[in-house]
Length: 134
Image 1 (spheres, one colour):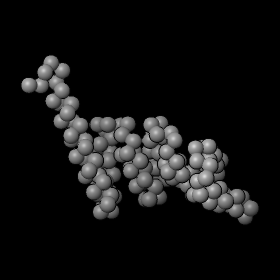
Image 2 (cartoon, helix red, strand yellow; image 1 turned 30 degrees about the horizontal axis):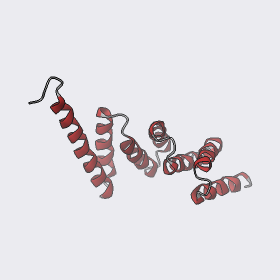
Image 3 (cartoon, helix red, strand yellow; image 1 turned 30 degrees about the vertical axis):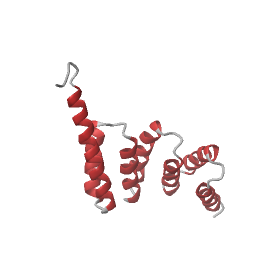
């Protein structure tokens, strides 16, 4: 019996999304990035605030050097997980690679507020300073 509120359909949607997320991870592991992007965006159509999927899709765009697109996914993901230092570091690196130094530094400062001993952010800040001196 499904009851008055149709719980069964909600459960099946959750199961379908969970199955698709497993498929997404498998595709990424197999380095089938185009298919992974397709699956990831299909998941996001049904569940636009899935932080894991936003991170994965953004990461794929980052690897494909589509940095502006990657940043848009990172921004959406940061709306959900604003203290994710790994995500902030990817965003900072994307801005740096686009020569958007101010934005990159802002991400770095936020990471330092969260994790003052983060070595990767210190390395990026050093790169930023060295590019200024060139």
